[in-house]
Image (cartoon, rainbow, N blue to C red; front, side):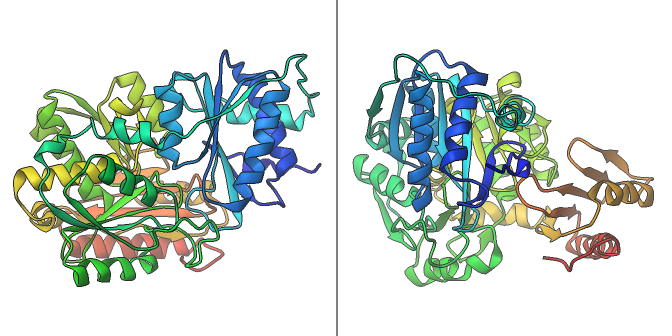
Length: 458
C-alpha cells in the first residue's frame, strides 16, 4: 500500500478516510505500536463518534491481538474517557481512534503507553511511522491476545464526582453543546448520577459522527451564534461547548459572550492554586500575561511549554505541575494523570459560581478589561521557516523566544507566530495593554506575513 508520511503528525496520526488512513494502515499502526512500546499487559482501544472510527478500531484490535496483546475494548468514548481507562485501570497503554475537531472525512489515532504517557514526535510517532515505511513483517503470536469489552461511563462519572465539592453546588442552568460528539452523554450521566442541582439545556447533543452542521470545532467563530443565542434565550447561568472528541472545552457567560480560553485558564489557575499554595502550573506561548499574573498572585510558579498535548503532558509530569490550560481549549490536571479533560473544567465552573455567588461575567470582566487579545489569526504561507526568520529580522529589538515558532515581547504588547501542529496553517496571536495597540500590531503583523503568503488569510 502507498503511505502518506505526512499523516504522522507531531503528537498523533490524522488522515482522510479511506484515502490516507484506512483499515490496513490502522492494523499496521497497531502492530508497530506493539513493536515500539512492547506493552506488558492489557491495552485499551476506543473510538469517537465517526462511523469510520468503528472500522479502524476493529483493525487496531486485530493488530494488537494478532501480536499476542490482550485488549480492553471500551467502545465509544470521549477522549478524556480514553485517558481515564488507561490511567484508572492501570493498563499498559491505549489507542484511541479519533479525528478530533477535524471535518467528518478525517479520522485519526492517538496513542499512549502506561500511566497515560503520550507517544509524540520522536518519542513514538516517528518510530511507528518508520517501522511501517520499512514494511516490517507482521507480528503473529502463537497465542492470540484476548479481547474484553467494558462499559466505563459509570466508573468515569464516579471519578469525576470526587473531583469537586458537589455538596457546595447550587441550582444552575447550563447550556451544553458537544457538537454531536459523545461528551454530551458524559455530562448528562454525571449530573444524573451525582443528583446534581444542574439543569442541562442541550444543543447538538445527540452523537452523530457525520457532523451535520459542519466541522465540530467551537473555536471557529462561525460555529458560535446558535450556542450563544440559546444561552441568552434560555436565561442560562453559563454555556459550555466541546469539540468533536470532547478534549477541548469552551465557555460563554450568561450574557452570551464567548470567553477565550485564555481568560478561563486564568480563572482556573487562581482557583487551583488557592487550594494548592505554592504549586506549579504550565502555560503555552500564545497568550501569557494573565496566566503568569494569576499564578504569581497565588504564590505559584508558571512555566512555559510549547503548544501540543503531548509536549504539555510530558512537561507537567516532569515538573509535577497541577494544571495547564492551553489557549486552544485543552485543560490538563495532575489528578488526571497529567492528561487533558473536558468535563472537569465544566464541573469547576459550577463549583466556582456556587461558592462565590457571582455570575460568570462578573468573574471574567476584570480580565477582559485588563488583558487585551487579538483572537487567533490564520494564514497560509509558502515557507514558514523563511517567514519566521523575516519576523525576527523586522522585530529584532524585541525580547524573542523560539520555544514554539517565534514570540515577540515588548513592554506594552507581545505576539506569538507559529506553524500549526494539526493543520497547514500559520497561527498569529497578539496581546497588549490596550485594544488599540493589539489591533495596530495585529494588522501590522498580518500584513507583513501576508506579503510572503501564497493564499489569502483564513
